[in-house]
Amino acid sequence: MSQVRTEIDRIDAALVDLIAERFGYVDRAWQLKMNSSEGAIVQWRIQQVIDRVKARAAEKGLPPEMIEMVGAQWRNMIGWFVQFEEEKLRQVQNDTQKSGVDGA
Image 1 (tube, rainbow, N blue to C red):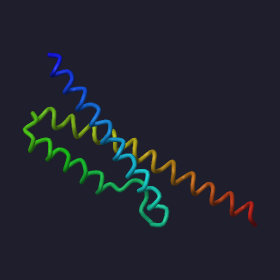
Image 2: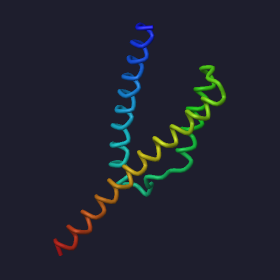
Image 3: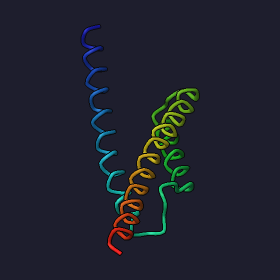
């Protein structure tokens, strides 16, 4: 049992590392969105990501209930990332407006 727990801990650590890596790209995404008309919420992209994750879970042979849970968890994680992007974009917009007012 000790070896199984060690492997579960290793996988948990790897998952956190991957989420941290994903966060780095989300952090970069909002910066790129500052110069585009695309906002933080891109509904088609959110659905595309969830569909891909669920398809991957199915390919890996996860039970249907687990596939739905994985999709729900991904939607939850994406929701947090979208809020993060929206807040960063809002901060930049507010800073730009303040500097425009102060600089006038």
